[in-house]
Image 1 (cartoon, rainbow, N blue to C red):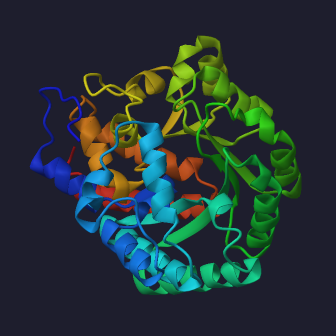
Image 2: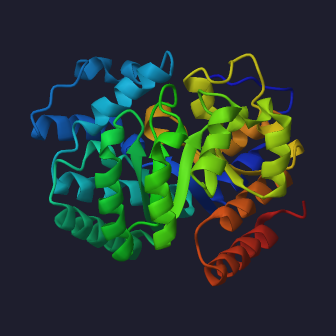
Length: 349
C-alpha cells in the first residue's frame, strides 16, 4: 500500500525508535491479525474450502473496497472452528505483540460469527488460559472486547450473554459493535448497550468509517460509546466534532486500513491531522494487520511521512494509555515505564 507521502522521510533514528518504543493498541481484531499461513493451516485441518486457491490467498487480501474486505475477513473467520484454533491464534497474536513491543492491547473478537461453534463456558476457559499463558511466555497483556456484527442483529442478545460471562471471568472488558454500517445504524442496538453499561461493562463502537457523521453521533449519543472505532467522518459535522472534543471522547484511528479499503483516497493525506487540530482525542492503531500487511510501528511511520514529528507521535502513544480501560494505577505505572524509555532513547530530541 503506497500512502501519499510528503518530502518528509522518516530517518533511520525515527524508524528504529518507533520499532523499539513500548506501545499500546486499542483497535485491533484478533481474527484480522492472524497470518495467511495460519489461516491456511486451520482451513486444511478443519476441512474448510477457502474462496481462493492457496497461491491466490495473498492477492485475495488486496482489497477493492469495504465489501471485499468483509468477504476476506469472514473467509478467515470460517477457518476458526475448534478451541485449539483459539489457543494457536492467541499464542501467535501475543508473540507478535512481543515482537512489536506492544505491551498492552484491547482486542476485538467477532463474537457474532463464533457463538454457535463452541460451548461458551469452555470457550471462555480456553481464552482465559491462553491469555494467561501468553502473558507469562511473552510478557505482554491483552484483554478482549467481543463485538456484535451489525449485519446479524439477531445475535445481539447472545453476544451480550457471552460477553457478560467473559466479563465476570476477567477475560472481556465489555462489548463492541462492528460490521458494515450501511443499513445497520447504531440505534438498532441501544437496548443491549444500555444493559451492558448498567452492568458496569465498557462499551465501544465502530462508526464513521464508511458512513457519515450521523453514524458517529448515533454511536456516541445513542449507544453511549466510550470510544469510537475509526470515526474519521465526524469531521463532516463541525458541531458534533466540537462537542466530542470537549467531552474528550477517544477515537481509534486506523490509517492504513482506511487507505486499503478506499475510505480515504490514495491521493489524499489522512484526515487524522484534521481530527487532532479539531481537538479530538486520537489514538493510532493497525486494525487488521495480517490482512492489511501493516504493523503499529508502520502506522506511526506513515504519519511521519505525512508531516508528523516524532514527539507528536510519542504523545499519541501516551494518549492511548489514557484512552485505555486500564485502571488509573495501571495507567500511571505504564506511563512511567514509557517515559523511562523515552528519556533513555530520545537522543536529546
